[in-house]
Length: 206
Image 1: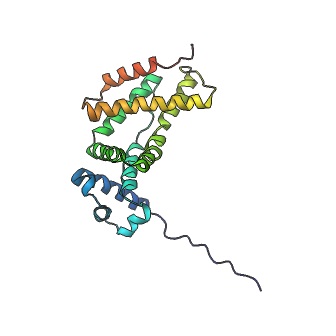
Image 2: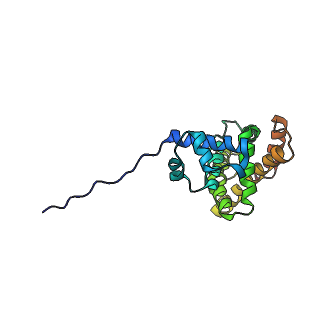
Image 3: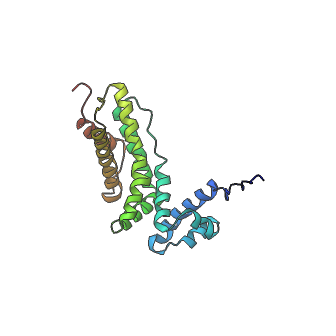
């Protein structure tokens, strides 16, 4: 007698449209009512989905808000510049424009404030936002190396350390400028930042 293999259980496929609606509703709720008053039930109502749909995707508010912020930062792209300076300026200007949007400012400041007393939230911010956006540094460095503007690094650990530092300098400076100092992230400022950053990097001719 042959045994019959039961069909695989695939479950209901996840809807990209529902995900997008939930993340957008999360950002809207943060702007309108703030972190403390926002609930998953309120987000579900705003997004027009059942609570169960939301709970199947996110375990709690922390995870949901971080993903809502991460989706915004995924809009950043490395511009097709003709030099390392042009690439840095292009990314900085994009970042500055992103931080001018109320939903970005509110959501980012909310998760950073909450993370000061929540190590698990800090880890999720790093994996969902920081590590994903570090791709811009890696792409820009690789492009500059191909153009002969930067030397190739032979020690992987040192190369990773340098990428971390470059990301921290750019992201930290732009966030402080836009959200703390409340100064403009304009062309002149971006060029000045790029000049300072590149002056501190080794050159291919060194």
